[in-house]
Length: 247
Length: 129
Image (cartoon, rainbow over all chains, first blue to last red; front, side):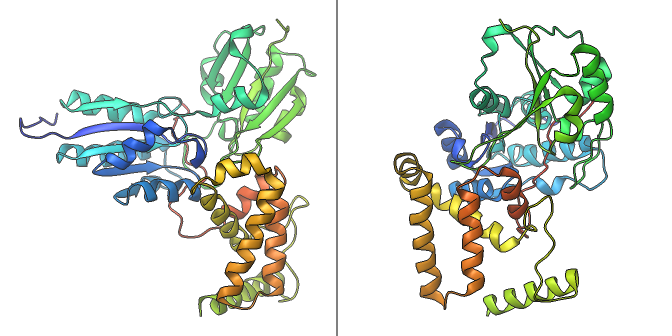
């Protein structure tokens, strides 16, 4: 394990840039501006511009991905890229799109590793895709409860589902795909549909949802009966399955 | 110079894709083919939107009015640099249509064509298992 010399003052702040550049919080913005180094991962060039405008000492983590390689290797590279300047005594900000603690592995790993090596590390919240979903679809998880799973893990672990509560499945557009690919692949999408059909009736209306990254532009919302789900999924979509019984 | 090269590149690309420099690329799913220049116009619009009080103006003026005013300003910017071409007008018309729609898919497809960006459209950060 890396040991921190007494004089080294490196620290890590992990922030979320939200979904789209306009959704960065004031706190996240300040953390980006104040950092000696910023390592960021965002999906659109407008957010790239926004981060680099706030801090010219910014570097994208996008190159950590290698086509066809398991994504976990990319996440390990991201963690190392983030920790390296921390170990060199710099104040580092790692910025991930959305909420950095929600369905993001390298952010949690970086904070845990930094702390284990004796560095100060903290995470600031951001606006996640699920936050946008609640706003755009007008649903409140307080009404019937809400279950939230990563789509492939949902298939692998087959958790007990309460159909009277809402269900949110993340990454349905890449379900069953562990490797990085510039083109979305969802090899287990039909299996996912079949699993959901075991839990809900075919005609149950689900919503394929994609939050908009662009200020002023509405989200992608595709209501579809469960049986037609496979044709409605988009690469970056999240699936919302309403409760079977309205509260 | 850059504009001339850009036009040459687009002409050659159309020629390669269609074998006919005058025919636009085929439409996909009823939408025009993704175009980097349209993507760059959209990118510029959204970057401008983050400046000053533009987000507030978008909300107070409404989207249609704000977009119209922006594109008038944009035409002026292009005219200051060079002659506004038919191709510019066509591109800005597509941009106007898109900005007044909620067609996220088409917008993403154009923006996804921007080369050299350090964004990664499908940057998944959660392992599947």
